Image 1 (tube, rainbow over the protein chains, first blue to last red):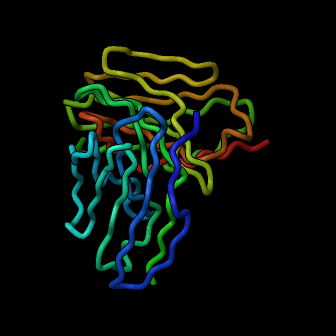
Image 2: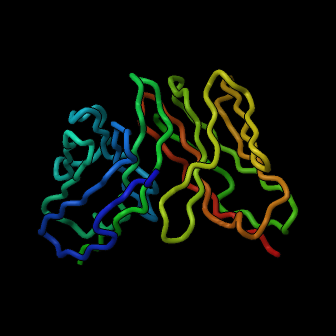
Length: 115
Length: 110
């Protein structure tokens, strides 16, 4: 079974621009979560989507948004980029059964650099 | 989750020795405790996980223990090998949202 895939793998943007990252979960998985990883703040939860609905949200500004499509693929968008948004953005997928915390499998990440 | 503290931040061992990494958490609602291994340029890879109704779980050279009363859990790696060198993260979860510890860089010297 193919793992979680993320595109693109690397991205360079300038301040003020916006960016869209894509994630394809493991086949059959219905939940997609996004995390930001930086040297200073570590791994931080951004949001989780299940059945095309945002189910959980972390403590990030509204510039960070996401969506999920009917095939469970997900995109996240960051608008008005700031230097501090430079990070590795990780996507994780899980089967999800109700409210139980399911095993999450991570993709390789998208490395975003904001200049 | 609220906060997860992980210690030590770096750990250097000789090949064949054991390595222990400890985490404490504060959220009483946490019911799921995974451990991830992250190698350079890759995403975190799940190595073992434990749920709150279990005190200990083992998978070959890797074991995890959980003490819900004290709110801490630990990762034990026995007979370490150079390929175990990586950054290890503990996490706690409730409602399919993970809160991660700060990570431990494990170096196994041949």
